[in-house]
Length: 203
Image 1: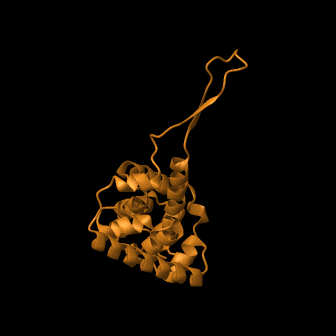
Image 2 (image 1 turned 60 degrees about the vertical axis):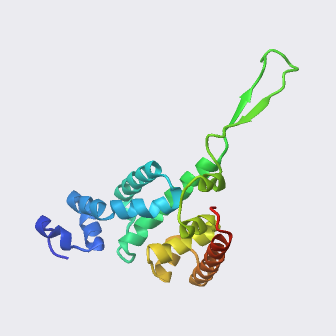
Image 3 (image 1 turned 60 degrees about the horizontal axis):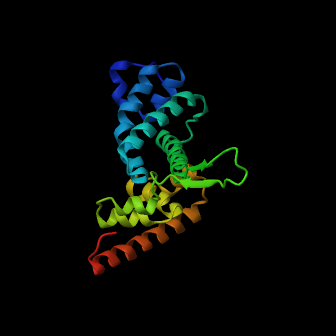
């Protein structure tokens, strides 16, 4: 790889840019951000359905990329490595939002007969309820309704157009399992779409 030339930055591959960034060229990192910020936002929206969450996750993803630049090895595609980071962050956010906050309330802390009252914070809605409140096309509704393990690989394959090998690398799932989950996920989507059409109703 030759010397870094800012005037040619748009012609460099993602992997070249990451290598230049590892060698201290901050402009290379900025170019990666410009290339992927919108695509990453659209990718994450498939999981969060919340643009503010997406903005936060995109920023956190690039922050992780910046901090973890030394761990990147060129044998992997940069996009696969970055999407893996983004997926893990999205999963963590999803789990955090699914936890119902419990608040302990005592009528009188000095009264031994006082019973603890547990109140669940309903401001964070379960995923299914949230999806019912969103106006979406049938395909998006069906995708949302898939189990997590199917939705993840279908999104990576059919929306992000990663190869089976790249999906296997990104998720740590054996390639045979990846193919099986994609096929099962697609089958479920087709079945659900047919049901939506037949019923003529919204999810």
